[in-house]
Image (tube, rainbow, N blue to C red):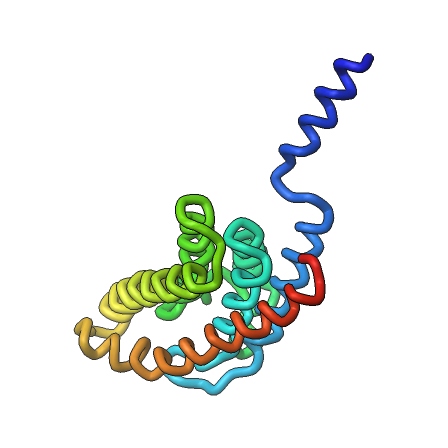
Length: 192
């Protein structure tokens, strides 16, 4: 009996996510939805969605941040209107800008990798978030070019970058800085 208890408590410690983790994951998925609804329509809508992704990753870390982004994307994929413009459905993810949304999954994975291999300090986190954002841009831009070329005609990398990346870089870096600052303030007061 004692062996079973020790084994079962040992097994419980290896759960993928605790109830607290699931609650925080859901909360940040909702934050992403709310922030995506605050938008300025452009070729790739300007939203606060990236701010919410940065908040999730900086407050929750790579693993829980990944699950928050995954839940957000899955909610949208099944048709819940969590994306920019109160839209949802697989069509959004398969559309020209869907690669940027799917690319959000890369950001927490890069952060998780650096947390495991290097450290969890703020400077490393900021650098890993910038690298993750660059990979998100790369994935989203490649996706945009493919979908645009298949549906509307030719699109060069330079034109895609002018439309979909360059207008957002400065604002995304500002959002990253704001998210990390807010995260540091929250984490100093609340254990997440």
